[in-house]
Image (tube, rainbow, N blue to C red):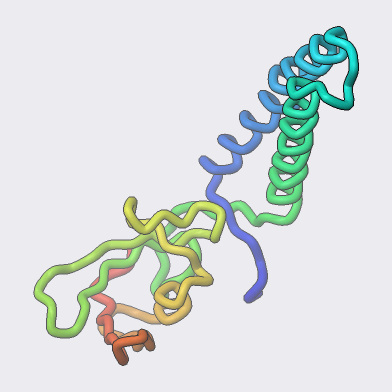
Length: 154
């Protein structure tokens, strides 16, 4: 399932809440802005109207994107496994470096390197997938190859 999209249950809840807000509160605000802008008269040169229409378009795009993500994504749970897979938390050590790094393998929607969440489709995520503690994962980078050793999986 290379092209499968994944989200955590926390992300699903977050997206569902955002969707409700966008479909209710935000839509209402934009419709009110459109009504106000229409009341100002001539729509051809009405900046408020054009801005509200642009915001409406962006809002509908975001709603569609969230609905699509929720429709096609498989919800993953943090779990223990003997191999690295989506949902795993893996501790690795870069060859030649004494520091260990811990990452949670998540779907692209939630990837955030700064918080230790890497996409299953990222080069590192793909290199680690299927590895067991003690295995090495080789990652090709512009500077050459980087080798990571899997220390542990949670």
